[in-house]
Length: 298
Figure 1 (cartoon, one colour):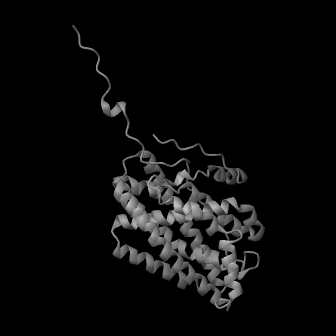
Figure 2 (cartoon, helix red, strand yellow):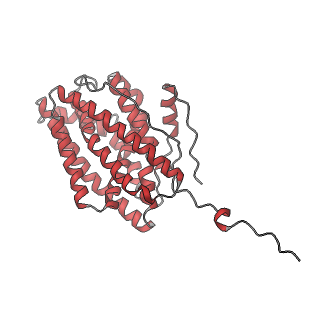
């Protein structure tokens, strides 16, 4: 009596689940901008412009740090889907660093101390490189990517308001950056999750967000102060009041982002629990890009 046919090997019968939780296919865009040539480009207000310029001062060194922390761990990733997303993430972040460096150079030409701000950010990143283990460095990237993702979400939702106040070239730069931060918001998160056990992953990412919240806001406040100082506004209650009003009241990105920020502390959290693919699709449609298909996880 002949033996019954054997079933497929277990490895092929049940493929390993994807290490990627991304819900959107994305790719690098090699865009170039002339943003930063106009002084007080946000509604003629040097205070709100200083907030955005302070953010931009963080990006060249910050994006390079993000790339380095992910690149260091990429050899541990076995999933082709996540490997492909890492490649596009690195490409997008490299272009962000380049374009914000060009932006910062134009702002510096107006008489603002962008070099000083960039050096301060680089010192903080270098300190993290020296004092933190590699996984903890990646944890900082994951936490800061959460910051940028929730702020990007707000900016995209308030794009009509932003467009009424921002100069056209600055509007295009910040919207493009917000779209790409949304597209790749889960990549570093998924890498850290893939290389750690669940308990370590949760403790590392929550501790990292608490640390990032403190140091990010200290750095940002010092940056804003130095930019306002160039306009002799560093002691102006009205200037600081306008920044507070913008951030916490109208349009209020910090106030409105609190629920998304706190979701991070859920053990089951994943960045694509905040599904805002429609915002990316709307931007793509307005810029003549074909809509991307959802990225399917195995």
